[in-house]
Image 1: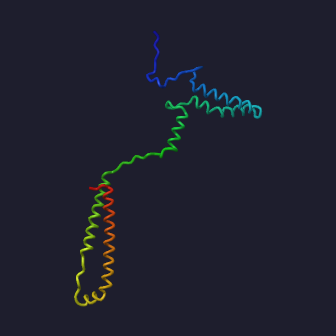
Image 2 (image 1 turned 135 degrees about the horizontal axis):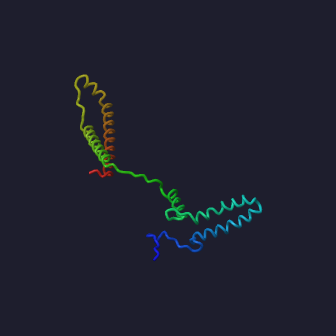
Image 3 (image 1 turned 120 degrees about the vertical axis):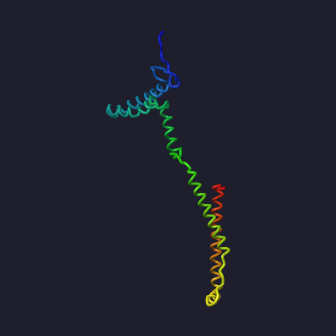
Length: 180
């Protein structure tokens, strides 16, 4: 009895139609003949034989390429489509990004400390009042009291406003980062 090896994966086995060629190869070679032969006859009258033969070969080469070339079980049109999708339709190279949890925790701790210092500053600015001075200093202070009072009040109000804005911004960031 004669033994014949058969491949385990029958997906790569192609049926041969005629002359040991597949249907795809027969169609591509027929198309190459239908395009190349009339082109050669038309060019042969106007150009020398060797030039018309070279032009015919250049024209029919894509037909032979589509008939014979195959990479990883894919024909050329599927490979060209994959290249098109990878270069033009996709976003490009996807870089691996990892999230460092410790940096995030350090940032959260930094935000907490900043919020605490701003709140302490806010409380200090609101509760701190100046004591009255006596003697010459008191007279001088009383003379410029109205000017100083308005300037200081404006500065305190502005500082309190800035602190309040900063605290609300940090609280909002804290909520967005979901800090407990």
